[in-house]
Length: 396
Ligand SMILES: Nc1nc2c(ncn2[C@@H]2O[C@H](COP(=O)(O)OP(=O)(O)OP(=O)(O)O)[C@@H](O)[C@H]2O)c(=O)[nH]1
Image (cartoon, rainbow, N blue to C red):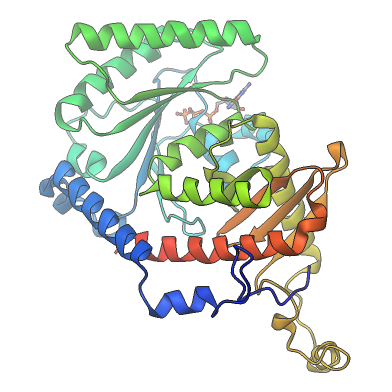
């Protein structure tokens, strides 16, 4: 894995003048274009949300996208707290059996995530539209998405009716809010039954909305369970909608896959294992699972072996002859990278940290392992590009 590949052009044209570093001082046309498009988008969003909402939101939450987890009231618990605990706090799924019912709104900031968003978990028994003490503007003014959780193993008619009411209320004042319906706890249901339920719920919601003259409301449906990767997949899709200029990220990964002959590449938020972008090849659950499990392996190994303090003497020995180089110059990446060959189908899998939150994970094609130096060069260039992308688009 060691190399001195930095400073080479990914096209293979030969050494370049350290593109990553040069770009940080000179602004390229691509950077200028991205900055301009991003600013236009931000301005449009501000206008859409209205200034009143922005003014009334509490300071500490300002500018941070917010995911609201809501679901049906009654004694049946749809699984909102379980979802948040499994995805964002690494709680093993079977330990959610011991979670207590949520009594108050739980506001959970995600400082160790790439986007610094918040997750608000609403108690099932609260109906915010019936309760005048809730400041609806503050709640929905800067919202990223509303996630409505329906328990598929229970009678869902009441949950669907309440969701319909919520959508109708929101559509009047906040037509741009994205509503993500998680048809949850689908583990243990047959594939046919899952699809039947999804179809039934979709029709009920669309019929109700069109009865009220609302067509094309931004409502999306996901089949989820905490007992498999479907919940991460669903959250990935939700988060992707919040990323400005996602298309640019996807184009970068698609190009990377083409030049390096990767089967699939994902950009992961390491802590939550949500993927925030992928290339344009059709998504498939199996490759996502392999890549996400690989992140777990790397994290476990890092916890055991990584980041340990080396004594000065030991470091000097490593940096001395025959290498005569600083440790950080002896590896391609300062932070972390790793590669391992999967035994099934001889497909190597490669992981490269982008920064402390993000990692690029890709599955290579069967015969591409011998092209590793070229692959490293291309990956390094894309990583520099990603860093610049997030520098330009980070909230100001
Ligand atoms: N089979 C199955 N059970 C689940 C799943 N997700 C959550 N559960 C179970 O559902 C029960 C209720 O979960 P909670 O997360 O507390 O539900 P909640 O919606 O937050 O409930 P309130 O806090 O009362 O609003 C727990 O016993 C979980 O183990 C799932 O995907 N599949």
